[in-house]
Length: 348
Figure (cartoon, one colour):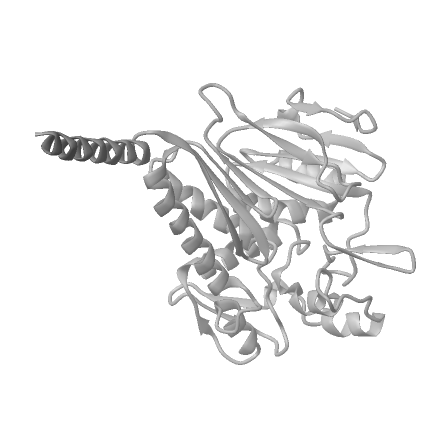
């Protein structure tokens, strides 16, 4: 009798433990994160208030999305769409994926609205400088001028019917590094919504998208980095919900030689880094690919022209920080930026 009771007790304990495990995995909700290493950056995705059992599959699928975009759009992957296009420059049209075609179309849109300040055909000049790689150097002016002859977004031909692309000059190269992360963030948001994820932070190496709110009626706050610091210190923050926050700054990647700092954002008209009084531009928008393209575009345009462009666009705002530590925002952000560093001055 005692043996029978002991057996029943053991079975009962096992059953209880099993149901606790099932309950914890499928009913208790928590926050779950995963780190990824694609698109030449370190990324992190955090899901809030989701079931643990759901989070594993969702985060795995997010990794698949990132890897697929990296495999098709990276110029350093031998069999990517971009590599195939560059390899056949001056020769043939190359049929590519719908996703890559969409990104190239969007890139050309940014080139058109900026009169070529944003130009994905800058690839040969980017390679020449090598900023952010072990081969970084200051090239000679002759080298730069030779490569500049290959830079012109108008020499990128698109065939919309069969989704093919041709670079009209041999030696041309496109580089989607200034826009692919934004596209990836938008695709991740689209997927998370399809899985009924209401709250998440997508951080693709500084390209941030905030999905939903931290808690009901409490938005997330995103920090605006100090462009004079390399440790990620923020000088301000702003409440954001269902928006992308993308920053381009001179602190991201640069080369220092003979006391001169050469940052990674290259002017397609000169082949040298953009020269103006800006140290960073942050774009806040409903689409991350828009934020990605416009952060580089407005940095190149400078404060006055960049501000004018952003003010002309719907659902898009900007924060400009100058080298003399002055902060300018678009009209819709007035009163919304929380400045935490007294050495910077909010001008409007």
